[in-house]
Length: 288
Image (tube, rainbow, N blue to C red; front, side, top):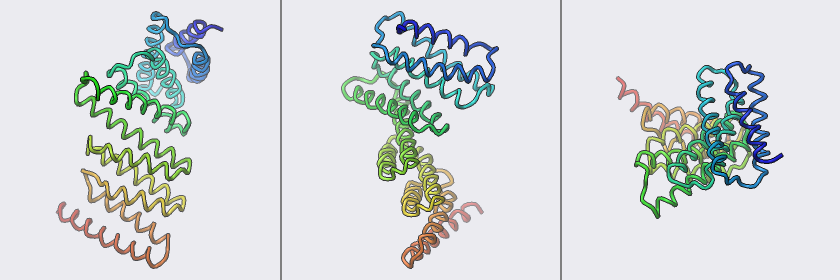
C-alpha cells in the first residue's frame, strides 16, 4: 500500500468521524483505526508533495476542531478524544515538518502539551511522555531561534511558551514518579522551578503539584520522598490563600515525620507544628 493510499484511508476515516450519525461504538472503532493508519503512514518516506502536505494539514486541523466541537456535548469518551487529538497532532507535525517558524513551533508546543496531558489523564504514560518530548523539542527550537532572530511573537505569547514548558516538566516529573524514578522526578521538577522567573503566578500550580506528589508518596509509605516534596510545596508557596494552603501542607508534613518515627523526626514534626500555628494565627487575624 502506498502512502497516498494510506492518505485516502485516513481521509475516509476523518469523514466517518465527522458524521453526526456515528455512534459512540463507531467512534471508538474509528479512533483506533486512525492510530493504526498513522503508524502505517509513519513507515513511509517523507511526503514532499505540497498539495498532499496541505491536505494532511487541513485534515489535522479539522480533526482537532472536531474533537473540540464534539467534546462540548460530551459525545465520546476521554480515550476516543485523546486518540483523535493524537492523530491530529501528528498530521499537523507531518504536514509542517519543514516549517520551523516561530508561530508554528509555538502552536505545536501547545498542542503536544495538551495531547500529552490527555494521555497522562488516561494513564498512558508512554504516549504522554512521547508528546511531552515533542513539546520540549518545539520549545527548544523556538527559543534557539529567538536568540539569533528578531521575534515575530508578542511578549505574551513568548511568556506562554515558558509557562507551557513549566507544565511539561511538571507532568514529566509525575510520569517519573509513577515509574519510581525518584531522582529523575526531582530533576524535572527543578527544571520547572527554574522557569518560575518567567511567571511567578505559576508558583501556585507548582506548589500544588508538589503537595500532590507528597501526598501520593505518603500514602505509599515513601516518607523520605514525601518529606522532600512537601518541603518544596511549602517553600514555593502560593500567591493566593498562601497561609491556608501552607498550613495544609505543613499538617501533612507533620504526619510524615510522626510516621517516620524516632526522636529527631518527632522534633522536626514539633518545629513544623509551631510554624504552622504561627501561620494559622496570622491567617485568622487577617480574616477577623
